[in-house]
Amino acid sequence: MRDRRSYALNGLCFFENAKEHLEEDDFPEMPIGCIGGISGWHLCLDRISDGRMWYQPSIITNQTPQLQSRYYLDIVKNEGMINVPVVKRIVLNPSFGPLGPFISFDDLIDEKNGYLKFDGLIVEYGFQIEGMLDRDNIWTFNFDDRMFDCQKKANMISFYKDLENGGMKFFRCHKQLLTHHSTYFEFGLPGNRMIELNNEDLQYFDEFLQLSHGARIRQYEYTTQRNLIYAKKYELFNVTQFIDQAMKHGSSPWLLKFTPVTKYNLNHSLAHLLRKYESLDRLVWVLKHFSSTNMSGESMKKCVRRFLELV
Image (cartoon, rainbow, N blue to C red; front, side):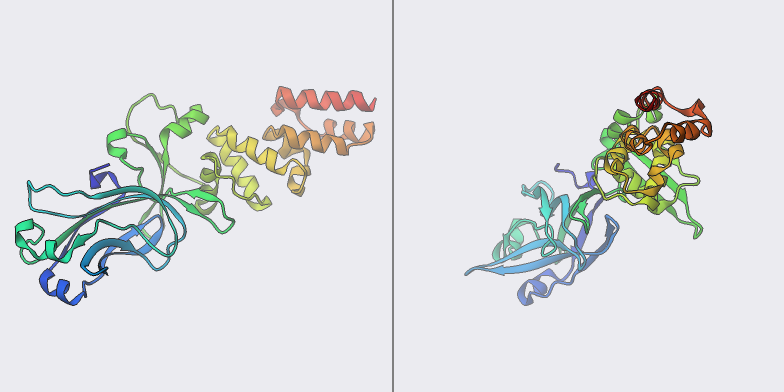
């Protein structure tokens, strides 16, 4: 993508007094903001020597995890003059960031080549983080930033919530992926969409969205309950199925209870739970004290099958 404005973080940086900095190799690091929830990103111009002197733009931060990213970097020439930016989609390791084109010292300092403008150099950049490797070595999605090229493709759903400090928190998701899994998001209208959050806990909602997008993050009892509530509200039953598969061996005491297992249609967990009822009296007692009005047909079949096995 040759348009930097398609990237979530993009802009132009002007390095003034370029001739002096080229000679001394002391270009300042230019702060460019926060992306992917990671702050402290800077744009640099670094010298590389291999018998000749070259300069290369780069984007760096002190706290980079392993990232799935795409980027655009270029040292801008005068209007009408051809230049070749670096445009890549790449996995970035913590030891380095996006790297732009190599341009020789001689080419940069020669005004005929069109790089120098008012004794300065302009670096054009675009940067997008699409995924991050978490502490459990699992790739997760970046919901902090707008989707790549979302203005043109209209491919984004944004969940938002007003914060007590007057700010706003956004979770920006891929619209086609959510509509594939749930009719809740079929608005019938084109374009990017906005959905206000009400009682959702922001910390847990991020994990829920990770699951809905297919990130197989580890499940814990204190998050499982909230994820199932959100999955039912937004009709993202792929999340329910994943939790059911992940917890079917009964590692969670909460999922050894009849009510949540049937309420959220956790069929694998229900089958595991029913096998624990080894007496007919116990199963009958549970069924008598449970309202079957919200039980799915599949759950009812499993209960009847277990009842007949114990008769």
